[in-house]
Image (cartoon, rainbow, N blue to C red; front, side):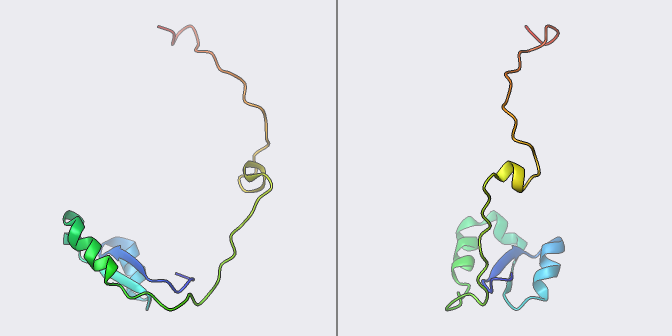
Length: 87
């Protein structure tokens, strides 16, 4: 929602509550969930802005597992099935 692009959600639960307060939020009637063609038409009818209000830089990581998840890069060891699970 920070991008200024329109956000759409079905009028159901917490996402709908959040979108009601956002000028770029578009609530879709839940009945459209059973009608993909009408849902698509409704989504295509949402006006797109000329450009986004905010440019969000994409994150880059030298090592995704280490830098983002905080996991040590360890080589995977092959696991053999235990004798209890072997058929």
